[in-house]
Image (tube, rainbow, N blue to C red):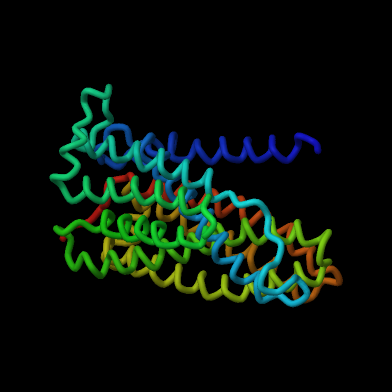
Length: 322
């Protein structure tokens, strides 16, 4: 096995990490908005958390699809080695880092003495941070157990915690915002993690079940992904309009850090949608349907960038006036 693929993955991961680390200064430049202390590190931790959430949710989603593909020992088809345990470990560390920030009054701690663990129980954000830490720990234990599908419940708890965290009680109609975020984040995790796991599964199946089984799995995924994209677009647009009233959207997309990063995310999602359409066309019309894997791999890379931009977006000040 050559080192080309692992090296390429490491390079892409390093480049994606630069988005949350260096993005805040670029996004905030000239807006007059104050930067949150340690915003780059917080954005990186949120990026890791979102990625750690996407991997196991995508695996559970695609493994379920795989069971219905004919000619693959339906019910118990071969699947690649799970990445859920290391993803849960990464999510646990990211959630722990974010909890330490909350424990110091949303400031980056200089040392362990600055962290007030007991104070986490005294605030809403602290309790949600602790919930995420514990949920990732339980998800990791479930992932290595005999019933890995049970990790769905702690992962759902993380999504609920993120949805509640993103919409504090002081916000107008916070439950509406939390509901939108819950659906948006769940669908995004299924789309991102699902495509990654689908490509890994197709690669494994080529030597076992042949081209037809892999093409069938990609076809099943593509049909669900089209619905996921529609839901992601609708919930994302609704959430944005709640934070940026229609009459101010165009101005805020260029005049605020949040708007600039949101615009970058929209453009990336549009690129992802174009790649998904290209892959779907190849899947349906090419002599070898698995040529769809090429644009699908590019789609995975673009989705990774979307995750990084999303992590940055959640760490920036929200330009909202209630």
